[in-house]
Length: 95
Image (cartoon, rainbow, N blue to C red; front, top):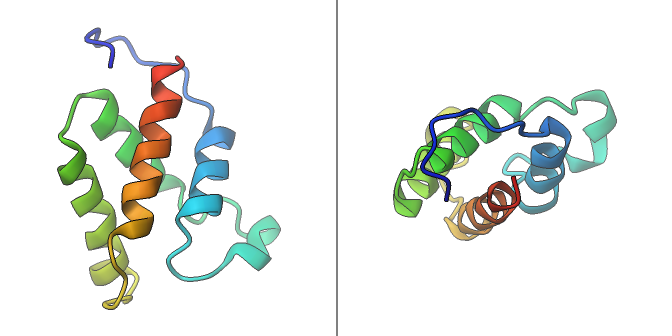
């Protein structure tokens, strides 16, 4: 991970691709074209946390908290959150 505080040029479209493919807690993937930005805030925050070297577990916890407490999906596990954090981290390493 970069140590610089310079802001990366993160492509929102790439975060959306990751989110829709690996993290769709409320099952909206089929309606994606109408609500493409549904998860943007969460994905951007997760990317920011990763960029600023937050521990992986903290970012996963953030996404799980969103799933369970803001989206009302109490039975969601962390598997999808783990995968999306890994994918975002991998993407950010390419910047």
